[in-house]
Every structure is written in C-alpha cells, then in structure tokens.
Length: 270
Image (cartoon, rainbow, N blue to C red):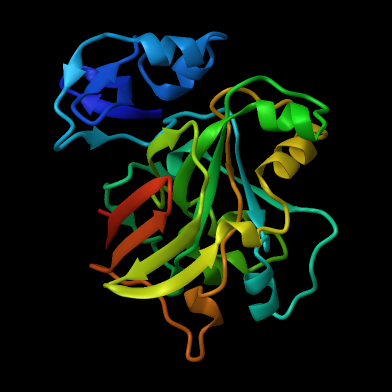
C-alpha cells in the first residue's frame, strides 16, 4: 500500500493512493492515522471520499512528527569519500518539523549559506510504539519507507562539531510523496538539473532500518509517525573537487527504486 498526506480545499487528509484514486482514511494526516492500533487493516479497507490521482497536492508525509532522527555517514561509499572509518555506532542528529516540505514543494535556500548541498536518503516511518526493541521487534514496528532529501547548509553544518544547525533550516527537507508499506527499497539516486550526482544501492547501508530502530529505541521511545532518515550515499556536492552546490532555480530529483520520487526546485526565502 501507498499511504500519504494530501492537501485539500478544507485542509489536509490522510489517504491511500491507489492507481485510480486517492481514498481518504478518516484522519487529518498520516501521523494521526498511524497512531491507530489497527491502522494497517483500516488502510486496506478504507472507502472514504476519493480524489483523482493526477495532480494530488502532497503535503509533507507526516506534517508534525514527534521526532525526526537523521543518521550521518551510513553508506560505505560516502564514508570512504569523506575519508572516515566505518562507525561502530550510528551517528545521530535531529531535525524539527518546520524543516519539512512535500514531495513537489519548493525547497527554500537557507539564508546566509553559500554551500547548500543535496543528500538523497531512504526514510523509515515508525508505525508502532517501541522501546528497547531487539531486531525482530524493531522490524515489526516499521510502517514502511519513503524518500527524503536532507538538503544541508554545509557552511553552517561545519561551524561546530554538532551538525544540527546546518540540517534543519525551515522548508529545506522534502519528504514523500508517500509511505510504501511493503517496499523492497533498491537503487537510490539524486539528480541536479538533470545530471545524476548520486547513485547507490540501499543495501550499502552500514546500519539498516531495523538496526536503526532498535538502536534509537534504546535511547528514547519511538512512536507512530516518527521519521528516520537513514543517511546518504557518495556523490554529495561538498565532497566533489571542485565542490558543487545548489542555487536558486536548481532542480532536485530524488528517487528510490520501489519507493518513489521527489521533485523540488530551489527558491530564495521570501
């Protein structure tokens, strides 16, 4: 199944996206829907108001998640290109909900940054409350997968040893267009202005989705709607020689085989 949050004339609505229609699920957004204990069966059997699939206005997948965890340096190729050793534990940082935009929304260039970079990422969405989970419990708590681009202001990121300030500018992180509950994520790629900059297999992850859910749940309780961005593969602009960055009008396309695609244009902050 594909589940999403769309914008409608009266607000937002959680929907199941079928080939011929988007069917409302009876919740204002996907985060609220995933909080229902029976959400899987409710999604399969929903028969609410229907919307034509063409031209759907996708909101951020979960507009107001309780938590957004991100993982740094989690693809072997990216770790090597950055001149680092493979980590023993995940490198975690966070975002806030104001950073999120929809799958086809504009991405706002961080004001004051001259080093705005792309980071295609596989997103994991939590579908059940989980704490101190082993691998099996962690896997069972995953609702499914989505597409994320962790657009990053590198000059802000490296002002200190903590990365958050370069990672959570408002309206900078597209997520969506939907959650795929039964995905087998394959190739991940990122194009900038039609040129492929990143291409890798999600199997190159050092810490996979279940490992990350298990690890994070040792620190804090994960709840339905929480998002984990699992890290980016090699090919980021900052690591290129010479370095390359995004600018006003840049077109960013992020794809994950078996999951979906984001398409976003970079704009200046108004």
